[in-house]
Length: 270
Ligand SMILES: [Zn+2]
Image (tube, rainbow, N blue to C red):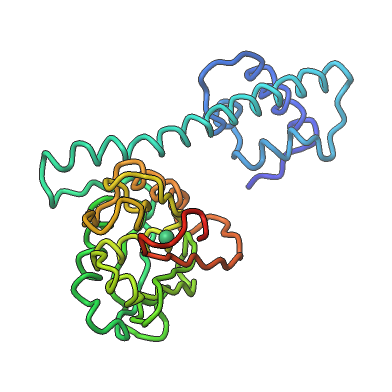
């Protein structure tokens, strides 16, 4: 990168400020190109390092910065809104078009590996529940691990109530899904149980008062509900959870959600 003189820095910073006084639709990259600099260099200039501006010049630069900040936050909001919207739109059309043509968004898909080697008789339901999630979401993909012991989350058969780590779990994580026999004894569908608990791994909380079309309503709709597919809103929320790919900053909390899959359990006690 050329070593510009302080005068040159000032000229280009002022040119940027002038070009940016109005809210026209130039991206920051285009603005940088318009004054012949790299984007990072532009910001160093704007910061005025080793350059002194007159109060009038500084005012022009400050105004331009405000415009850029306002436009950037608007752009981020628009992108966030689109990210939430696209999966919902896709999930309504995919079913009609083809069950196998799952479109992918442009950002990198997060791949989560799971270990089901200690899940016993839950193998079939796990396979189906995982497929249901993979068919419904685009930003995260679940695959069986090839190296047990280093999976991002595990499924295991237990004798108690089902429970799961509340995600979203990311690669390198250590999520845990306990597939509790008690829920099966109560008459609940195994595939729905797995799909619900997997929803927790993907960052969805419980919503017991929801209808059978939701996975996260869990035991709420009763044992007759065997739906094991997320609805459009649940799929969209998961896609939002993974919208930033593996580069997202993840909080290091570790919360476990225990599900009492029982019609007899008093409402609100879990
Ligand atoms: Zn739950």
